[in-house]
Image (cartoon, rainbow, N blue to C red; front, side):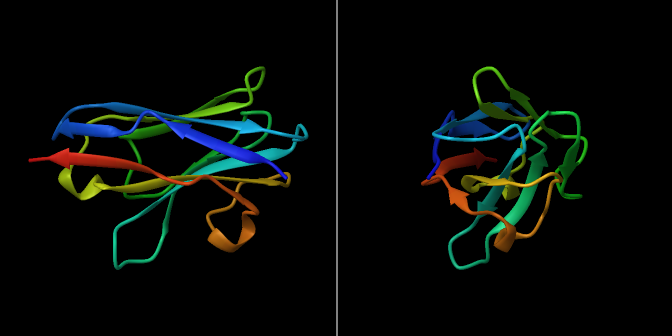
Length: 124
């Protein structure tokens, strides 16, 4: 079982930036895909971005393309989500997810491990 520990959330004004971190603790392989999803109360959890175990391939949702970028430090088993030009509609609880597989996926059902979530609030 892999534990995912998230950090870096908070409150920021529109147009500002935040960086989320997620560290995988436990037995992961070089093929551990990690991703970020977000959820607004009353709505379904939605895909934001994902990255392969090597960090060579990434996938972003259209809604954040050009503003958010995902990266990873394989030595630290940590994934980062850099969020720039934040908008009030980016306000949500952000969840880190992971699974052993080769390629990224935007499907929530493909991920086996989940963090507890971290709040991001963007004020207008």
